[in-house]
Length: 385
Image 1 (spheres, helix red, strand yellow):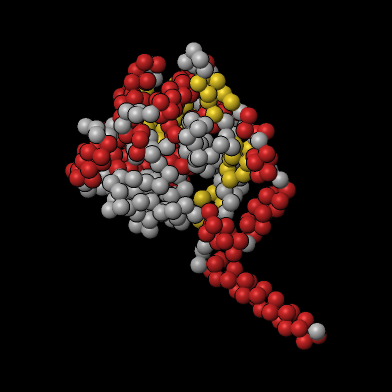
Image 2: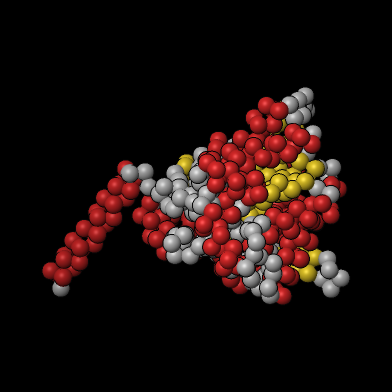
């Protein structure tokens, strides 16, 4: 028995030393995969204030979450005199963990606007409230509960063609622990926040989950294990399927062919309308910027043509056209990025999505994509004043 205990002790000590050695190695090579988000009773989840680390799944960037829980620098709550503020609402394209903060479209926007003389008498600030995975209902709650407190002059909604419509419908969304707008009998929408009372969401707020997040903050080995378990399948290559990407829906690139998708679109339009109305009531201008599904701006026309044939459509601009029509009806600006960038990509061969360490031409915006988006938003604002 004594020999057995001694052997077990030696084995345990060796295991601890091996783990510590691996921890040192991970820190030495700069590996980090922090737990970026935490549960929130109104929004479903939010960024964890003060968390920082390297993001390396697509691109490589150091990400620092500010004290208010945003991927941005800190901003004073009270808007100083002589400042024009832009509140950006969005999802992972605004959270922009794939690029350095200074390369994100919202960080580039103030300088682009200064260059054209927009609001020339004022200093322009862009405040980022984008959080990965958010749908339009969460963006509405974010505006109501957080962003409007900073007194924005312009509310810029970043809308992702590839998954926002799905994320806005409770039956279609893969993530239920969030607020949703529900379609009412008369065609309007109402906000449903009942997720906060579901047992699954309460479990995420438990002490055990808090301890696990704290342990992950301190140990890179734990981060690696969690990251390996949670990693999504890679983006599907264009050789596997023309234009398909994990987590996105090709269905949005064509008119709805099922009642549930038409309902999802009606909820989406109602939700955007609610955002517009809320911004106007608080004396803020409202604008929507549509983020392309990557295949919409693929440089190779053969890739786009193959998908058009598969979907039975003449072009891939259905979501952009529908958002633009809503904008005309409701009286706000819409920047439909795909329509402008598709010919640019074809003529220049530039990929606006993707990274060499993932798949070029798929996934999130790279630096070129963010820069182009900032240019297009600035152009619309500068031309309209």
